[in-house]
Length: 402
Image (cartoon, rainbow, N blue to C red):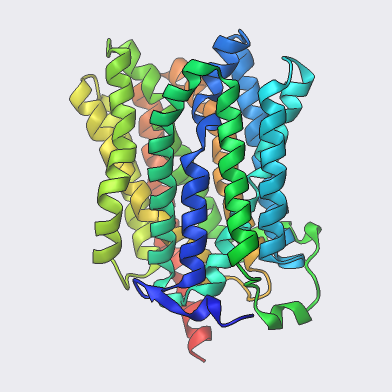
């Protein structure tokens, strides 16, 4: 590995990290498709809401496979090669997606688009390679901040661009994805540690063993539960708001609070929580999401719904840097990509189950019961982080100290 990854240039973080940060920000700055995909399906292709939901579920299914593929490939073939391959694949898929006719080809494009996002675990593994342990939570937090800032700006730019036709959203997304690929090709070396290349290459079939490893199992269950409940603020909360007579404009403003909280609070949070163990931040994050769920269970006004969004968004701020930092800390040096892929499965599984379970539970049992159950799940997640995650992190810290 060249000296570049370990050369610190800004905010005590390596140069290669900031190159990846800039590339990811540019990529998300053009992340129009995911934001406007439901409108594209229902307005441009005249899909029903249920039909559009099935297409979105295919995207989530592709994400499950992509997370596994990207993590495994980054350990077997290298971070740089995996990121480049999946970014180029993503750009091609986006262009095909924009012109695919309604039907099986469009469904295949949605599935492939989900798979192409598998570059994420490879990117996280690269960050874990070049950033020292003590700075990882901060580095992952800044990266998450860049993603959300990019998405917030993309929502504004995408709305203007869509007036000229939805196809331009796919073209713009593909172009920024290729820019990220060009940045990686030109300035990012392979970051996988040299000693990792000498060990046996990981097999794709090894992922189930990672998920049941004591260092990851309790953490993974806790994060899947917390993320599942957190995602309901974007799935079932808008339905509850409309049922309570909240206007469409107000629903949009409440949702926008999520991006505002992250962009404003995350840099301050990173500064004032420096040095805190990951398990403590993850326990606090699960507790905040639980509190937000309890607020939603009794919410009936715009102010109450806004308080729910702010509270759960604070939970997102807390776990956004701590979770990948924990995975990078406990993962074996030669399996960091595979382990980050396993963590990405938590998000993919929650994203797949959330739109299916949340609205059904709300309709069948009512919003108070659904949200109260969600708060109980988050309480369980907090307990798991305070026990299993804490124990595994301390053991990993002791091992690194030796």
